[in-house]
Amino acid sequence: MSAPALGKDLTGLETLSREQIQLILDTAEPFKEVSERAIKKVPALRGKTIVNLFFEASTRTRISFEFAEKRLSADTVNVASTGSSVSKGETLVDTARNLEAMRIDMVVIRHGASGAAQFLGQRIRSNVINAGDGKHEHPTQGLLDMLTLRDRFKRLEGLKVAICGDILHSRVARSNIWGLTKLGAEVGVCGPATLLPRNVHELGVTILPRIEDAIQWADALNVLRLQLERMQAGFLPSLREYNRVFGVTTERLSKAPKDLLILHPGPMNRGVEIDSDVADGPHSVILPQVTNGVAVRMAVLYLLAGGSPDWAHPGGGGGE
Amino acid sequence: MDDRALARTLARMATEIIERAHGTDGLVLVGIQRRGVELAARIRALIAQSETVQVPWGKLDITLYRDDLQTVGPRPVVGETSLPDLDGRTVAIVDDVLYTGRTVRAALDECSDFGRPRRILLCVLIDRGGRELPIQADIVGHKVTAGPGDRVDVLVSELDGRDAVELVRP
Image (tube, rainbow over all chains, first blue to last red):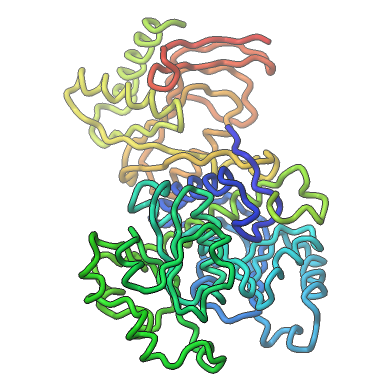
């Protein structure tokens, strides 16, 4: 029995079909169990070489990818921009071509520029997986959020998910919006007007101006990290102000018509966008998200490594 | 082979498993996804009837241990694996058809990642010949001689609506 192919690269959820997203989520299910085994390793990607190319700081995502790769028996190399020839001014394509000359099979890339993963995927033969590119997408985060929601609600169709915080700069928000709407969920966005994209309604989302509106409306809140560097850029008056107006607190949640599931992609600013007793509370699935992250990434690596008819032709990227 | 012949064969296999394992103590049945799982469930029910013992059992999906994963193109769907403790047990691996032996090779590798069974028995409903690896079954329901182009279809009512074994010659 074989499944529909995924294409050469995973650059975002915007370019995936509903069926392809469903396939990744369904494939992630059996991989959850692999991480529960005494020997947490299967030979599926034995002999494959994967480079984790991280041009931006990351702990959770990089470690999660590395665990996923190792649990599939792939050989992995980590390249960070500091301490590599990137800091000597080498371009992205030259770095990748050099890696490819060493016969690697896959590249997991995080980069500050939107579109970096697609750019790379079109220029090298190896599979490319986007681990976050600028303000564009962070597809595996979107997928693990969806898997966590599906675990708890047993469905995504008709589910109301409010994404709260800095929507404007968030690749997590964009991947969630694309993925969830394709699978039939309703998405709301909530945040200060300065941190909402100008034409956000064109993405088919409901705008929730106040956090109280989001709490009334939603089945689940996906609380984004407030990137502290936004403060200098003048998007917000102060952190305390943000917490007072948009912070997810126990008191606010107590007015919800039902218990809301709480997600957060991490790392958290406790006491800013989310209070500690919410983050550690009974409805928080922040740690199950991390567990699911490994399973989703294993599923993506497994599916992409299978190859597809256009594998040999660079330029077929974008997961079409 | 029709449903009654299949039932008789499974009953004989269940008896043989208990004989070869010297009783049901320490016996574990492991079905290989997907039809091996259904056959293991039936053999378990037959053992429960004759011995009044519920032997522990599990499901094994060998997809991630296949030796042709690099060449099969689009990836096969991965099924559920759930196994009880295998350490020191007599593990009876149950599958529908034994052909090249590659599935069994993968199942043996996967089992040894889960524990160290005292002994592993291989039980197959149909042995169709055509081995590519030095593997043989301990308990065989029926032997058939099928050519490389032939198909042996094992149908079980849980998945296919009826019980039967069919040799398809294209």
